[in-house]
Each structure stands twice: as structure tokens, then as C-alpha cells.
Length: 503
Image 1 (cartoon, rainbow, N blue to C red):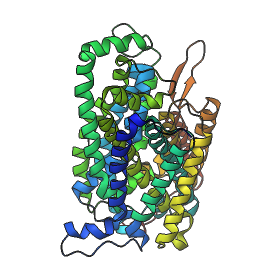
Image 2: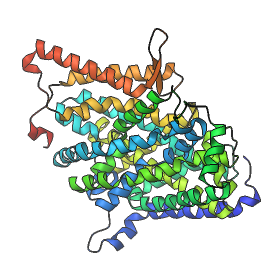
Image 3: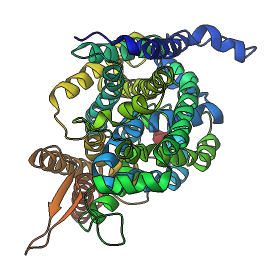
Image 4: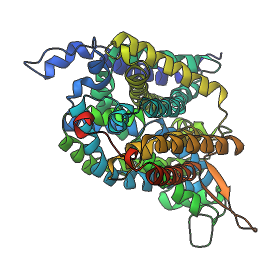
């Protein structure tokens, strides 16, 4: 382990102050929250519903920060600029997907929230079991959520590790620091911690990003000069188009598959189910696109790094090295704290969402145990740590996209299951198995890349592996449903009665 250079002492001090102040506020939330809610008792984390869903009492503002906080993560601040730095405009696929997803939220999520509230459900697997009366399908959906969230949490650990390394430390300390801080923050605070400190994260990131997109271009001679320099360092593209010919289809399919997957993850769905009303969710679907503007500005940091002369063998270090090169030490430390908190808050919600799946669906006899949920959440973080150590993805963003391949296989049961289609549980289960196995096999064959080339006769095009596996899943599910409907008409009902669903 290397010691930090003396020139970084100020930056390290600023970083530690903001980072640990946020952890302190989050882990002591039960004591200071009543100061802002007169007449209400302090929240307790003794019951799992309170620890894992915040008592389902989050209003529009808290939900806006919570959902935005666990949707815009180290993926946004570290992974997206890193991809833009390496590939150019191709890395901007994250922008259209965050636009596509909000009509989906507006149309689907209030319906899921209503079913969950009326039935007392806490997870996607709860909803699926109530709708299809299948314990096996419930376990399948829970397993998908658990496996999918591990590489996503791993990405957050990488985000925290990255800024610790940029401050001058190396070896195992940065990863140990990331893991321990996340474990403590989640264990002590529950969902109230990220919900009520997410606004700190957002304000800090806004300050860092607005400073970067204002000061960095001025320092580099303006946006025109910045784009000109960046263009000389990026792969060549088609004439008159920022994307290369081979990038158009991957760009579009990655955007579409990411949009479908975004709110199927345990952490994003946890943020939705913690809202106090369906209208709260609709309001957030209207205003959350504000985050997309910030995402576009953050993505441009990858281009700014080229103009600033940043050269690094690790694409994850692009943004930290840019901040160190342009900003004074104290402000770089502030920006690093914003990035680390921007990873800490959503990673906590991810671990809580996964813990809810374990306690409600895999070990339902212990679902009211907050201590059991804390232990489950800790185990999830250990699994994410193993992903960091053993998954050798080329880009950090690939970890999130790999999780998307897995979680997309819950789409037919959770979302299509709301439609008046006769899809029996065995058909959905068979589609899930074949889609999941196909997706994971293709990812493994492609070296953990989230794209797979299809075609013949000299023509080949790369398509999102998650979208390809979802297509296989849907075809198998619908085909099996039609076959069962033909062979067993009386046994091909779509759902159990509404009163059993909690509707």
C-alpha cells in the first residue's frame, strides 16, 4: 500500500469530511428525522418493513431523490464517461434509455405499487407469486434479482475504490474502505439512510458537474476546441454521423434493453414500493427526466479528458484524473466525495432490495426479522465484493449491463403478467429458464461483453445480449402458453383471483 502524497492532504481531508459526515447523518437518521416531522415518532428499524421499505411513507420529494439516487450511480459518474472516453458518441446510449424509461414508469409502476400495497408485498417476487400462485416462479424471480444486483453493487464499490486510488492510495486499502463504509452505512441506517441523505449526494454531484462543464471548457479553450481535440483521439466514425456504421444497432439495442431493465432491479423497485401513493410515482415519472440533463453533462467529461490530455490505462480513472488536473486539491476532494457518496447511496438501496428478496421470498418464515435482513444485506455485499475480484469486465459499465441481461428475464412475469394474456406459470418459468441460460451463456462466450453478433452470409450485427435473451424468453413463454392452452384449456388461466393478488 502506498501512502498518499503530501500534496493531496487537503483533498483527502475534504473528502473524508464530506464522506463520513454523510455516513454519520445516514446512520443516525432515527434520531434527527423527527426534528423535521413534528408529532411523529422516530422511525424504528426493528421491523423489516420499516428497515427495508421505510414504512411505505416516502412522499414526492423523498421518492424523487431516492429513485434518482439509486438510478444515477457510479455508473453515471465513472462508467459512462469512461465509455465515452474510449468509444466516443457510442457511450451516450445512456441518454435515450433514460428518456424511454419514464413513460414506462408512468404506465406500469403505479399499477405494481397498488398491487403491492393492497397485498402487503415488498418485492417483485411477492407480486409474481400472488398473481400466478407459483412458489417456483417466485423463487426464480427472486434469484434473478439477487444475481443481477451483485455486479451492479460491484460497480459502486469500484466507483468508491477509484476515487480512493486517485487520492494516492493503492493496494487493498481502497477496496476495503469501500466495502466497510458501505456495510456500516446499510447495516445501521436501513432504507431511511439513503432516502434522507440522497439529497446531499445530488447537491454535491450537481455542484461538481456544473463546475466541470463550466470551468473545464474555459480552461481548455471552449467547447469547440474541446470537441476538436477529442475527435482526434477517438475511433473514426461514419461521414456526417457521430456513430460508426457498426455502432448504430448496438447503440439502439443497448438503450432499449437498458430502459426495459432499469426499474426491474430490486433497488429501483424498492424505491418505487416505498412511495406513499401511486400519484407520487406518477409525479416522479414526470420530473425525473431532469436527471437526464445532468447525465448528458456528465458523459461529456469523457470528451473533456481527451482535451485535457488525460492518458490512463484504466478508463475508470478518467474522471478522477480530469478533476485532479483541472481543479485545486480541495475541490477535487469535494468532487471525489460526491462520486463516492453517489456510489454509497444507491449501493445501500441495492443491498436492501436484495435483502428483501432473501427475507420475503427465499426465507419467508423470517421476513419480519430486521436483524436477518441486515445479515442478508451484508451477504449480498460480500457477493458483490467477489464480483469485483473475479469478474474481469473490460469496462466498468459492463457490470451494470451484465446485470441487465439477467434482470430482463423477469419482464414477462412481472410486466407482461399485468396484461390480459393467458400465460400460465409453467410457461413463464420455462421461458425464464431458457432466456436466462441463453443470456448467461452468450455473455460467457463473448468474454462478459453485453453484446452478441448475429447474422450469416457475411452479414453480422451486434445486438444487446439482454434484448436477445428476452426475445427468446418471450417466444418460449408465448409458444408454451399456446400449447398448454390447446392441450389443457381448463388449466390455462392467467392469474389467481383478484382477492388473492391483493388488488
